[in-house]
Image (tube, rainbow, N blue to C red; front, side, top):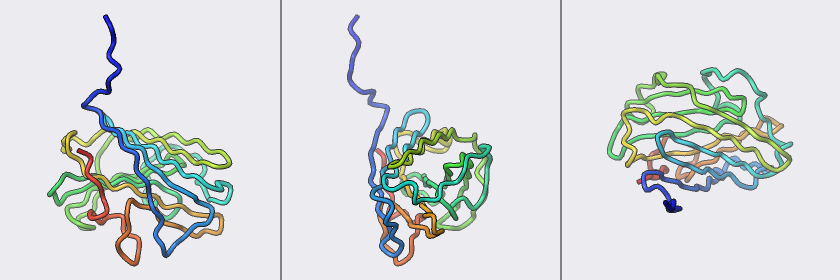
Length: 185
Protein backbone atom coordinates (compact mmCIF):
# COMPACT_ATOMS: atom_id res chain seq x y z
CA UNK A 1 0.00 0.00 0.00
CA UNK A 2 1.40 3.41 -0.98
CA UNK A 3 2.02 5.94 1.76
CA UNK A 4 0.78 9.49 1.41
CA UNK A 5 3.33 12.30 1.62
CA UNK A 6 0.68 14.96 2.13
CA UNK A 7 0.84 16.83 5.45
CA UNK A 8 -1.55 15.98 8.27
CA UNK A 9 -4.27 18.69 8.18
CA UNK A 10 -4.59 18.56 12.00
CA UNK A 11 -0.97 19.72 12.38
CA UNK A 12 -0.30 23.42 12.01
CA UNK A 13 3.15 24.86 11.37
CA UNK A 14 4.10 28.53 11.34
CA UNK A 15 7.36 30.39 10.97
CA UNK A 16 7.29 33.80 12.64
CA UNK A 17 9.76 36.67 12.56
CA UNK A 18 10.31 38.67 15.74
CA UNK A 19 11.23 42.37 15.68
CA UNK A 20 13.42 44.27 18.09
CA UNK A 21 11.81 47.12 20.04
CA UNK A 22 13.38 50.31 18.62
CA UNK A 23 14.30 51.75 22.03
CA UNK A 24 16.51 48.82 23.06
CA UNK A 25 18.67 47.69 20.15
CA UNK A 26 21.27 44.94 20.36
CA UNK A 27 23.92 45.12 17.65
CA UNK A 28 24.98 41.51 18.29
CA UNK A 29 21.60 40.09 17.20
CA UNK A 30 20.76 40.04 13.49
CA UNK A 31 17.49 38.10 13.61
CA UNK A 32 15.12 36.15 15.83
CA UNK A 33 12.66 33.65 14.37
CA UNK A 34 10.17 31.29 15.98
CA UNK A 35 8.91 28.12 14.35
CA UNK A 36 5.65 26.85 15.84
CA UNK A 37 4.19 23.40 15.35
CA UNK A 38 0.84 22.59 16.88
CA UNK A 39 -0.18 18.97 17.28
CA UNK A 40 -1.09 17.31 20.59
CA UNK A 41 1.74 19.38 22.04
CA UNK A 42 2.96 22.81 21.10
CA UNK A 43 6.51 22.84 19.79
CA UNK A 44 8.52 26.04 19.55
CA UNK A 45 11.93 26.63 18.09
CA UNK A 46 13.41 30.04 18.93
CA UNK A 47 16.39 30.78 16.66
CA UNK A 48 18.64 33.75 17.47
CA UNK A 49 21.19 34.60 14.78
CA UNK A 50 24.14 36.93 15.32
CA UNK A 51 27.33 37.22 17.35
CA UNK A 52 26.33 34.77 20.08
CA UNK A 53 29.56 35.26 22.07
CA UNK A 54 28.42 38.85 22.74
CA UNK A 55 25.24 37.59 24.49
CA UNK A 56 24.79 36.58 28.09
CA UNK A 57 23.28 33.09 27.97
CA UNK A 58 22.28 31.54 31.30
CA UNK A 59 24.24 28.40 32.18
CA UNK A 60 22.49 25.04 32.21
CA UNK A 61 20.68 24.18 35.45
CA UNK A 62 18.03 21.78 36.67
CA UNK A 63 14.79 22.21 34.78
CA UNK A 64 12.89 23.83 37.66
CA UNK A 65 10.00 26.27 37.78
CA UNK A 66 11.64 29.67 38.43
CA UNK A 67 10.24 33.21 38.62
CA UNK A 68 11.68 36.35 37.01
CA UNK A 69 13.37 34.59 34.11
CA UNK A 70 12.46 37.60 31.95
CA UNK A 71 15.21 39.65 33.62
CA UNK A 72 17.78 37.78 31.47
CA UNK A 73 17.86 35.94 28.15
CA UNK A 74 14.52 34.17 27.98
CA UNK A 75 11.90 33.11 25.43
CA UNK A 76 8.23 33.83 26.17
CA UNK A 77 4.99 32.46 24.78
CA UNK A 78 1.48 33.80 25.45
CA UNK A 79 -1.63 31.74 24.66
CA UNK A 80 -5.32 32.56 24.65
CA UNK A 81 -8.50 31.88 22.73
CA UNK A 82 -10.16 34.53 20.52
CA UNK A 83 -12.49 36.84 22.48
CA UNK A 84 -11.38 35.39 25.80
CA UNK A 85 -10.02 37.48 28.69
CA UNK A 86 -8.01 34.70 30.31
CA UNK A 87 -4.50 34.00 28.95
CA UNK A 88 -1.37 32.04 29.85
CA UNK A 89 2.28 33.08 29.81
CA UNK A 90 5.20 30.66 29.59
CA UNK A 91 8.87 31.60 30.10
CA UNK A 92 11.73 29.39 28.89
CA UNK A 93 15.37 30.05 29.75
CA UNK A 94 18.36 28.56 27.93
CA UNK A 95 19.31 27.33 31.43
CA UNK A 96 16.29 24.93 31.07
CA UNK A 97 14.45 26.74 33.89
CA UNK A 98 10.86 27.67 33.10
CA UNK A 99 7.75 29.37 34.44
CA UNK A 100 4.03 29.28 33.66
CA UNK A 101 1.40 31.81 34.72
CA UNK A 102 -2.24 32.49 34.08
CA UNK A 103 -3.94 35.88 33.99
CA UNK A 104 -7.65 36.66 34.26
CA UNK A 105 -7.31 39.83 32.12
CA UNK A 106 -4.53 42.05 30.75
CA UNK A 107 -1.81 41.87 33.45
CA UNK A 108 -4.48 41.12 36.11
CA UNK A 109 -5.03 38.12 38.38
CA UNK A 110 -1.59 36.58 37.84
CA UNK A 111 -0.99 33.21 39.46
CA UNK A 112 1.20 30.19 38.84
CA UNK A 113 -0.34 27.91 36.21
CA UNK A 114 -0.45 24.25 37.18
CA UNK A 115 1.09 22.31 34.28
CA UNK A 116 3.52 19.60 33.33
CA UNK A 117 7.10 20.81 32.96
CA UNK A 118 8.09 21.67 29.39
CA UNK A 119 10.87 19.91 27.55
CA UNK A 120 13.66 22.38 26.78
CA UNK A 121 16.81 21.76 24.75
CA UNK A 122 19.47 24.27 23.74
CA UNK A 123 22.10 24.36 21.00
CA UNK A 124 24.66 27.14 20.80
CA UNK A 125 27.42 27.87 18.31
CA UNK A 126 29.24 31.01 17.14
CA UNK A 127 26.32 32.36 15.09
CA UNK A 128 23.15 30.75 16.51
CA UNK A 129 21.32 30.12 19.74
CA UNK A 130 18.53 27.57 19.20
CA UNK A 131 16.01 26.93 21.96
CA UNK A 132 13.61 24.02 21.34
CA UNK A 133 10.59 23.82 23.64
CA UNK A 134 7.67 21.39 23.87
CA UNK A 135 4.65 22.01 26.09
CA UNK A 136 1.39 20.14 26.41
CA UNK A 137 -1.47 22.27 25.19
CA UNK A 138 -3.52 23.39 28.20
CA UNK A 139 -6.82 21.50 28.38
CA UNK A 140 -8.88 24.69 28.14
CA UNK A 141 -7.50 25.42 24.66
CA UNK A 142 -9.10 24.31 21.43
CA UNK A 143 -6.48 22.93 19.03
CA UNK A 144 -8.23 24.67 16.15
CA UNK A 145 -8.12 28.22 17.54
CA UNK A 146 -5.21 29.71 19.39
CA UNK A 147 -3.97 33.27 19.66
CA UNK A 148 -0.24 33.33 20.22
CA UNK A 149 2.23 35.92 21.40
CA UNK A 150 5.88 34.97 20.92
CA UNK A 151 8.69 37.10 22.28
CA UNK A 152 12.20 37.04 23.57
CA UNK A 153 14.34 39.03 25.98
CA UNK A 154 18.01 38.92 25.00
CA UNK A 155 20.71 40.15 27.35
CA UNK A 156 24.14 41.10 26.06
CA UNK A 157 27.44 40.74 27.92
CA UNK A 158 27.12 44.37 29.09
CA UNK A 159 23.88 43.41 30.90
CA UNK A 160 21.71 45.41 28.49
CA UNK A 161 18.49 43.77 27.36
CA UNK A 162 16.76 44.04 24.01
CA UNK A 163 13.15 42.98 23.52
CA UNK A 164 11.91 41.01 20.51
CA UNK A 165 8.24 40.40 19.66
CA UNK A 166 5.96 39.82 16.71
CA UNK A 167 5.12 43.52 16.77
CA UNK A 168 5.60 46.57 19.02
CA UNK A 169 3.07 49.38 19.22
CA UNK A 170 4.02 51.22 22.43
CA UNK A 171 6.98 53.31 23.64
CA UNK A 172 7.98 50.52 26.04
CA UNK A 173 8.12 46.80 25.24
CA UNK A 174 4.89 45.08 26.33
CA UNK A 175 4.62 41.42 25.42
CA UNK A 176 1.17 41.11 27.07
CA UNK A 177 -0.63 43.21 24.42
CA UNK A 178 -2.90 40.92 22.42
CA UNK A 179 -3.01 43.39 19.58
CA UNK A 180 0.52 42.18 18.83
CA UNK A 181 -0.30 38.46 18.85
CA UNK A 182 -1.30 36.25 15.90
CA UNK A 183 -4.05 33.69 15.43
CA UNK A 184 -3.11 30.12 14.65
CA UNK A 185 -6.18 28.80 12.88
